[in-house]
Amino acid sequence: MAEQASNADDEKIGDIEGLRANIVEILSKGKVSELQLLPEAVILKAATEPKLAIEILVRNKKRAAPVLSDEGFIGVLDLKDTLRFALESYDAVYGGNVTAASKKPRRKGSATNPAMQYLFGSQSSMSRQTLATLCAHNPFRTVRKSDNLLALADIFAMGSHVVGIIDNNELAAIITQGQFFQQIANRWMTGMGMGKQGTCSLQRLWDLNYIVRPPKTVQTNLKAVQAFRMMNECQLSGLAVVDEFGTLRHNTSATDIKLWLLDGNHSLDLTIEQFLVNIRQLSIKETYPFTVCSLQDTVERALKKLQATKYHRLWIVDEETKPIGVLALTDVFKFILAQKEVKQQTLEKQKETVEEEEEDNQKQKQKQKQKQKQKEADDNADGNVNN
Image (cartoon, rainbow, N blue to C red):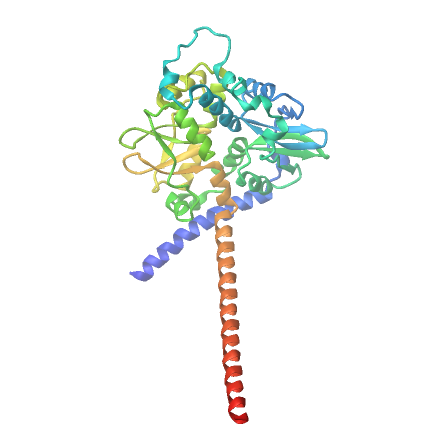
């Protein structure tokens, strides 16, 4: 029985490793030049005023865009990074008092966007920022058009959301993490990458720590501003929104920030549930509130759901639809590149090195003690002879 259980475990490991090997082979053989690349890219000049830069992103419905100076690309402006400035202004006005904010009368039909007021009003320090400082912590990474697709997957595994495609030493196009996943997923789903390996369960990704847990959650009755504050503090765009029983009801996303900046008339003093319902009426693409799988579902099913919904994350839930983990596109690319295993192997190697050094140090100390004892014994012996 023990041998049969061991064989079953080996088979599961083989499935997941076989799946990764198939996907890596596809990506290694494919070229960036084979992708459908859109040349119409939004590029922000470093001299652009931050307010105008944000308006350009919002108007073009982009989450992020590279910033170009006279010396070259200096980083990526991400709408998620604007959140802390909006909250800073909100707190300056209301002193973190959500009740006071909810009682403030709101002008109907105002042409001024409250969200942009929070970002660039007198209480916000964003108006004193430059585009260079805002984007400095987000490097703009690039690949050559002649590179294989694995090189591109490697960059998306780092957490980049936009990557530049270089051709003849010039930026030819920009591709987003979501666009790349959609195109390579098409290759996997046509039978080139899945096969029997795709039937391995998500439990294997869980065991290998590619499913993040526990997920960050907020309750449906929490004020939107408090949920946004948590997103900012955790540096996450995706939070699980649960009811009083812990059941998943909604999730937040970077799109919500983008829609809020686009319209801005939806109050942050609403509950996060009401805020999401209201803000998503602006987007006809919001077909599903969220997508889920269980640990018993297959990896193939999970990837197909991500492809069908075009979401950037999938929630792992238990039998009561309570979120227990989250699988994001970045995690999928990390799995493909075996980053968790490489990191674990590196940590184990470092631990072994430290232990070996500690053992050597102990041996050296022991030798020193023995030498010292021998010297003391010799000194005593010489003293006795002299006496």
